[in-house]
Length: 155
Image 1 (spheres, rainbow, N blue to C red):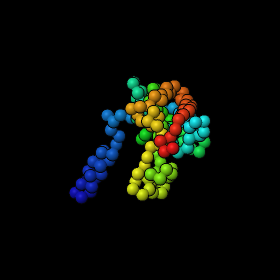
Image 2 (image 1 turned 60 degrees about the vertical axis):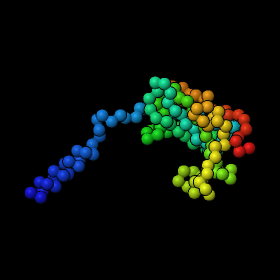
Image 3 (image 1 turned 120 degrees about the vertical axis):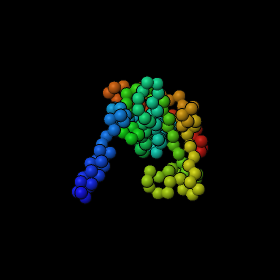
Image 4 (image 1 turned 180 degrees about the horizontal axis):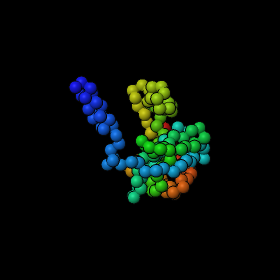
């Protein structure tokens, strides 16, 4: 009898662990990369976010710029790149309260004393309600260069 109960419990548990056929899967992605510059110079440590617009299916896709301003997108909770479609683009560069860059995710103490992080880029690039930056990702993917101009908020 004990064996029958254990088998029934295991079968019930296994059935609950399967994929839900009604769950929606994320769309396929294509490679998306590019470069961000600030007044002609590479912008490092900035977060580039592509936010789907209109009929574009999927979730936000993000990438972090390196020292040369280059980024590669990854779909949140999904694969590398972004699904083809129309996007609004937000570029953000958060700094600690003392003006130094935030450490990479998972390294160090984050924003530092007081936990304050300050946006250093103007709203026209860093605020979803104010940005005019857009991208249309074709079915084969692509590279997108963003040449930002102006004065940083911390300057």
